[in-house]
Length: 375
Image (tube, rainbow, N blue to C red; front, side):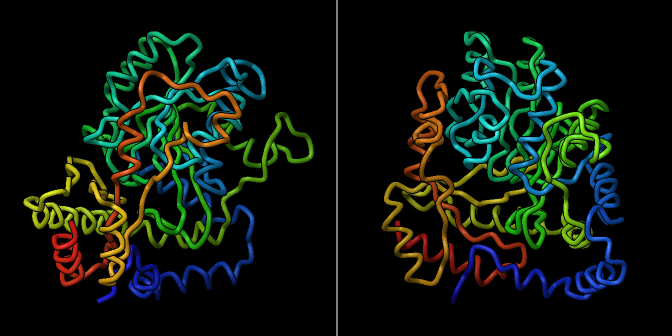
């Protein structure tokens, strides 16, 4: 049996008629730039999140850049932050989170993770914000679909009057204490990369916010920096959300809660099947967790991955290199707060297993059986 990490062909077949109809509608109206589907998607996602405003954009990476640029303009009166402005975040995430901080002119300060959750260690985050001069904001990453402890993050931020930008690239639909992620921080940033819980047929993203000024700034920045493209106010980007992607995402949005529930059910079955397997540490599945990736810890990862591959089971490592070890961050002055030992250890042990929403019970049981024999 072959068990893929994700089967996008199966997902397309599952909703083929609706997707084909949505594409055909775009072919008929030919409004490829900021067509009606873009506004409709923004409004529907805003309602889904209970957020006041949403702005579609070209990718999840650009979403973070746009959010930070808007904050720089609002809080400093300048187009970009300066390198003296520090933004606290995790080193155990995709490169885009830290890269966006650099692109917005600021400097990342990396804080260690909680080894149980893979998210920011709240104790270390609090110490960093209190003891480090120049911290202007926090970017909590809801890694693998698990919500960060946002009540504590927001309290830390409020105590120092600094901003919070949620990186929700892997957690669309997740919630914390009854509130959807993306409606808690000052801004929320989403990726609709094809492999995400809500994924398009290419790059796409979105920014959510409850602040009308930040909303206006983000929207201008997506369109070259102005309300009038021939008379702009800011250094902007061509970062609009494609009409075609919006049309596809509108179809897939209808299935998001069902697909997230399916992911969660698979994760719970993995946990049950692997709970007594020596050498495997399974993730805690908490309320609001949408399980973008089902990530275990194993001590002999390379051998286990090889065994899985031989048996036809795909697996992935997210992420083999913490950000603070990368040349781009070393060369551009990234800061480190305390020890990042938990992030470094996780990078050597984590491994993600298949968790396709349409994955069969037979496939799930096969993964459990293979992994049980491999460790």
